[in-house]
Length: 339
Ligand code: FAD
Ligand code: EPU
Image 1: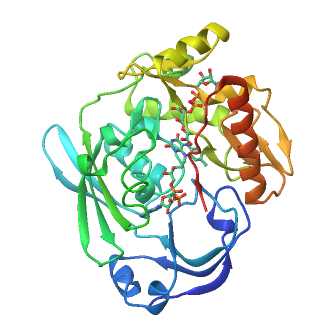
Image 2: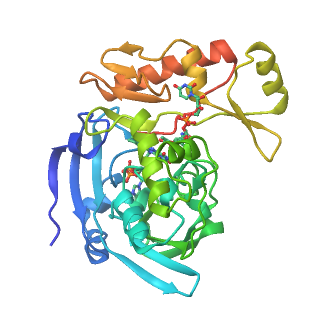
């Protein structure tokens, strides 16, 4: 039985805590529910937006259409041998709880991705990543229903065309697939990646010399808590912009002008710049307009500081893009999905 709601507030469904209304709203608890939904007039006569945890969405207006909240739960082991295990999680599982489930079983691989908000089903959308790991490193396959014909499709790693915060689901298949489950291939032996950023120093501060999977997860959680705002306390969607990539020549030019430039070389010969550093250099940390603000501990994060609208956040993002461009000649691209 499908329980459509009409004209409801999406404020509880987005981590920015922005007020916006949708014409119709439906929660999907099983694939059978979704197959029923495909047969309804409401589905066919409305534009559609799928949401999981709403932690990478900014509503700049009401959504005049059908919002489909994916709530399909379940985690299972698909196959295993003495070294590896394939674990499948349904799309409505909370990402962090799924990571914790894997850690408790002793399955290694996802620990650096601890505490990323949202649901499993959204994780392939932008190939979520943190602390030197992206899901493409561990991704096995996903199942998705094509909303145009109701057929179930399976995408392996190559078919997703994962890139930095990119996949086919944001580009050529945008708005076509309802992802129902995602599988990951994990190891049963410890294969830890502690090389990125502050993980090792955090482990040292925790007085841990031979870390376990859980220790690495705890270190990541501690670092994240020290700079990223908890969406339950302050509305936000994590990094608002991507870290921009520039060619070698542009990097050299910037390095001459700004000797403290924070950048990382890429295998392609290009460089990735730390957008948070660029924004901070424009003296924008803590800058606030109309209740939308730039987080004081991490300039890449825009926050709903004082009951602002989605448009206020969007306008602030335009201002940031302009300021960074004026100072560095570098164009920032938004990571957050703008509705
Ligand atoms: P939503 O915001 O609900 O949706 C995001 C997009 O995916 C939308 O386009 C939506 O239509 C689509 N979508 C969602 N579910 C499905 C589905 N089942 N089928 C098809 N399409 C779907 N991201 C990182 O990569 N790394 C980080 O370290 C990180 N840190 C964050 C920290 C904070 C404090 C916050 C608030 C966000 C952070 N993010 C990070 C961003 C965000 O958590 C991820 O992008 C997450 O995967 C979004 O999941 P969600 O379920 O909330 O997606
Ligand atoms: N920096 C500053 N000022 C700031 C913020 C950052 O100078 O206000 C500089 C610092 O020098 C720091 C460097 O930028 O060393 C990188 O900062 P940080 O380690 O915080 O990472 P980030 O590049 O800002 C990225 C991801 C995050 C992810 C972290 C950890 C993007 C867009 N963001 O942030 O992902 O958690 O690395 O791996 O790639 C997200 O996508 O929502 C997200 C939070």
